[in-house]
Length: 473
Image (cartoon, rainbow, N blue to C red; front, side):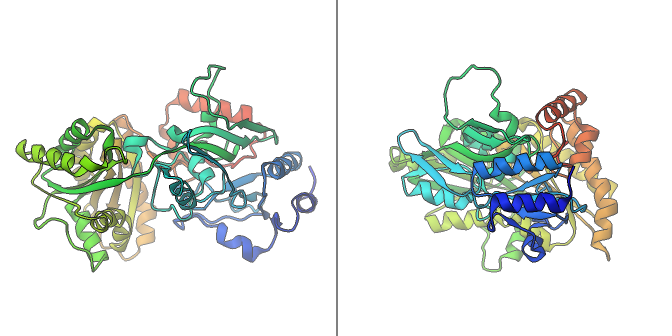
């Protein structure tokens, strides 16, 4: 094994002046994760411009024994793209690999590089009358490679599935520098395992995604967003079933929040207004969409759906967006829950899922339990009820040292919450990934057979353990 200086000299010669930097000032902004929980160090930052350049670089890393930490937009929620503090790892930026290679309008698919920003992808396919049906709050920085590596979710999973369901083909560089290339999509292919699925959601520990072929759908010609007030989360689940029966595939979003979350948002957004006149224990945002073949009857169908819901006493009150501006205003309330909660003070956040049908009972049972065990805390759950996934925040009581609380009571609360989720047959990470934040909890609570299989695959594909060490497994 040679020295770090020898490795960096060889890498610089291979990548050129734009492909490698040792400038600490240029590297520093990328060494802390988006939430500010983890900060690491790196020997340099590499920015290859092509799969071929990356393949050469990975071969070089393998021969020198240099760990690699891949990074897209650095917008992950679990510290999965942040190196440790040893300074031995090479930080790998995929942001230069940002070419949209082809948009096939007839086949409704796009092939693009891992560094393409989600918002850029949205805009490019919209110009062709199509849509990439995955969106999230960080769309201005999140990249395709990062979204694939973390199997990102978002607010449209109810209809279209997570990133795993939208990847038709994949290209990646493996730990020894070989290029895995299966970008051409086939609807039927029984040549053994679906190998691309090993890489989706693996957080860069099995291979480095360089390009993908993604599914597109027709652009939305019209949409209706409904805001409803309900007495309980169980009532929201019943309303969801009603909407699924009445709207079918046109139902694209079904988001829930308690009154406490809405109150926090209205304080956070001084110009915002509550959609309904009264207060309700729970609020639901429902989005129904139509393409050009069905747009003419969309509002009429939504009115019929909600009229029947009122007749069946499925809700207490509701209002329907009268314009695109009002639809956006409703969504702004939902998307502002997390920043509004942060304003309230220290909290521990949990991205959890349980079987969809169990979610109302889970929230109703565990919230009072957590609040009783840690007096003064407030448990609030909001998010994607239709996916069985809520963001479960436990807000600290008034404390003098919020950081100390998070390291003591906060850590204990998270451990208790993960125990409860596991008891209910759920997952401690619904859409944010494991990274380094939940790695030890996955080891503690994961199924031993599943963990053994994960480790076996990891060892087979990365025997030196150089790909994103310390993450996921």
